[in-house]
Image (cartoon, rainbow, N blue to C red; front, side, top):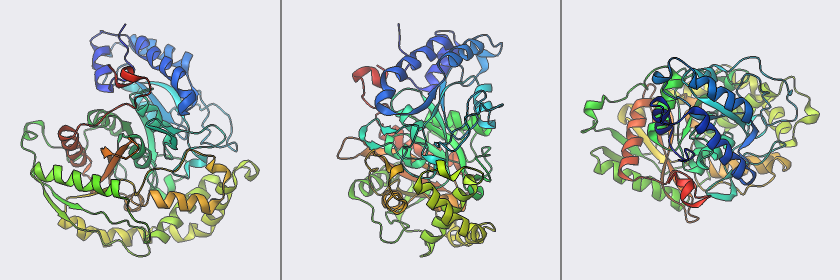
Length: 460
């Protein structure tokens, strides 16, 4: 029997719509893979085996099966979004183990499109940090299991990279989609503000957090984005124009926005090589650095901690880890500074002229590979902050501005794990970014699934 684990969402949905395979067969195959591999990877906080199989049968019985864009596609959901009948633990022992009475809007949209939720994925406590570990487990990078999958959507990224699901749902408040996607060789897009329903905890980290897809191909990311947004991504080129895509003005920057943090050689090389590919594709590519303000690090830290302070309200501090307690305590002192969004508006005003001159910014996605997979939740606050800042300084500016940004696999690290670049655009340019990512994929294809089980892991 053909194994559907390791196939793309587009392939699976087409096969289910055409009745070449049933949703139950697809889901059962992925559950079996989870059972074999997740003990090594730690992607899932909980697996909904029986419920997922029952829901797969419900999808098969739908009268609109032939029209469902995600017919029978298994999906994993980050454990800070409500899934009906399951608790939302948000990576913490301080949160209640109470089943949710309804689906989050993004989960409801995925299910309406025919997707089947197979489980909820591990996150760091309150989704604060760029590594994923805690009382519910440690998410490892399937390409390099000694390293963290990243965070905070680390479990979702690990699940997709290991072929345990073809797509997963995550969110991004300071890089929490792009960081694990870059570590695990995935495609993701953090949409601009208001494009996909947010509703993440209390206040969406002052409007910085956005929900988005994690996938192994641009085609899958585009499909999931379209379902989540309820429409095609803005700025997308018409299919008839894609044979000769419009030339874009692309700025390439290797500079870290955070003073004192340098980009390592593999990530800088990946950005340069991606720039060369896009130049050969006909785009106008120039080296240019955005005018990041010297105060950017302080602004990012204030918003990062203040968002955690809001999320920690009402939780029993005795059950929070020390790093979370310190982060929230600092944030309580910063809430009044960030509530009015004045610093974010100043940043947007400073960067807008740059994006008047250039359509898209290309950067490395990370400064270096992720930290070791270790009990970071048991370590001190400053050690965590320094480790996070040293490897992921390039993502926070685009949460502060609220502009769309992608992580796209490109190149390979010395360890053999994937490298990645970041694409950033102006508001409303999600389709444009996806088109450029597709051009990178077409001209430099990347391995999709980590080779955990030889040929089977590649979907062969």
